[in-house]
Image (cartoon, rainbow, N blue to C red; front, side, top):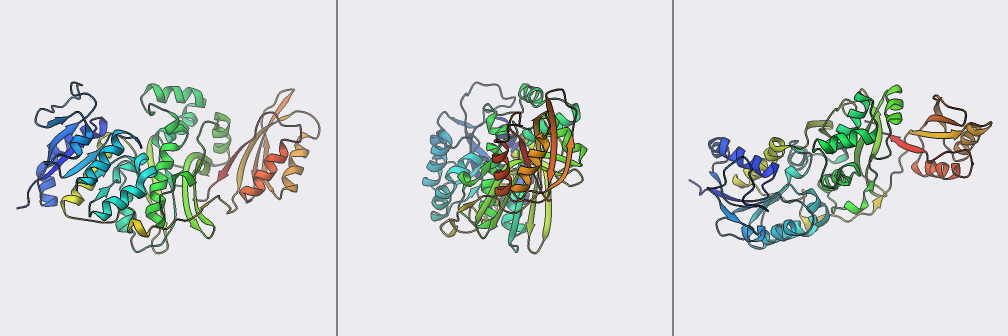
Amino acid sequence: MSAPLRLGIAGLGTVGIGVLRIIRKHGALLKERTGREIIITAVSARSKSKDRGISLDQYAWEDNPVALATRDDVDIFVELIGGDTGPAKDAVEAALAAGKDVVTANKALLAIHGQALAETAERDGRALRYEAAVAGGIPVVKALAEGLAGNEITRVMGVMNGSCNYILTRMESAGLSYEEVFAEADGLGYLEADPQLDVGGIDAAHKLALLSSLSFGTVVDFDGITLEGIERVSIDDINAAADMGYKIKLLGVAQLTGRGLEQRMQPCLVPDSSPLGQLDGGTNMVVLEGDAVGQIVLRGPGAGEGPTASAVMADISDIAKGLRAPVFGKPATTLTRVPSAHAQLPAPYYLRMTLDDKPGALAKIASVLGESGVSIDRMRQYGHDDTQAPVLIVTHKTTPDALNTALTAMQNTNVLSGTPVALRIETV
C-alpha cells in the first residue's frame, strides 16, 4: 500500500476551506479512486484565530507560507493565497525548490510568471497543476491537455468572469444601469477587493492567457491581450442589442494566426440563441474549437467554494495517481514565442452614438463611414430631444483598422456629442 499523500494548504479562504471539507467528506472515496490516502498535515493563513466554521486543531499551523512549503511532512503544496507577487510567489518558488509538487488556483501568478515556474517545475520533475485557476469547476485545462490532445486547436473563446456576466445579465433582466448593478454586486460580495480586476477584464484576461498557452503551445503572454472592461456598456446598449437579437458578454477570444497570437478580452455582441447568448448569472462558459472535434462547449460554475475546491482536488488526485505532464501541454522550453497580433479578421460592429440634432448630422456620419470603407447594414434612431439624437448603427463585416479610421474621422465632424461606443459582433 502506498504511503499517504500529505498536503500543506496555504490560504484558508472560501476555496481552502472547501478543500478541507471535500477531504473530510470524501476521504475514503478519494483513496479508492487514487490508490492513496490523501491527508492534510499543515496549513497556513493570515489569522489562526479567525472563525472559519471548521476546526483546524488536527493540523500543524505555520504563520509563514514559505515555511509551510518547505516542511518535510508536505508532499504537495496547495497555494490558495492569490496574487502574482509576495507570499504566493515566494511560497510556490520555495516549494518547487524543496522538491514539492504544487497545486494552485492562482491565475495571476501563472499569467505573469508561468513560464519561469513551468521551467523550474519541469526541470526538477515536479508537477505544477492549475485546473482551479481557470473557469472554476469547469475542467477546461484537463480537456485541452488530455481530451483534445489529438486536435489542433483553432480557436478558444468564452465567458470567464462570473461577476461581469452577472452584472450584464442583471442589467438586462432588471432594467438597471451599470452603476446600480455594480453597487448591488459589490454589496453582495460578488466583486474582488479591487473591483477593477473583475469589471476591467483583468481576472478573465489572466485566464485567457493560460488557455492560449495551453491551446497553441506558446509562451504565456498576458501583456499581449487586447483588454477592455465592461464599464462603458450602458443599459441603452443592453436594450438595443436585445432588440436586434443579441446579448452583450465580456468575451475572451484567442486564435493563432499567420500574423501572431491574437488574444482579446472585451465586450462583444453574440446571438441571443447561441450557447454564450443564453448564459445567465455568474456561470462561466468556454468554447473550444479543434480541427478534428469541431466545436465543444463547456459550461459550469466559475467560482465558489465547492466548484473551485473540486478543481483543486482534481489536480491533487492526478498527482496521487502518479500522473505527470508538462505544465502548458508541451515542455516549457519548447513553447514558442510569437508576436502578439491585433484582430484583423473582418466582423460586423455595433455602433452607438449621440448626434447633435441638426440638419446633415447623420449624413456626415454616413459619409465618414463610407469613405473609410465601412458599409452600413442597419441604422436606427431612438427617441431624441430638441438638441440630441441617439443613433444606432450595425455595420457589415469590416476590419478593425477601417472601423478605427472611421471613428477617428468622426471626431472631426463636429456633430458628435460624446464618444461613440463600438462593440464587435462575434460569430459563435
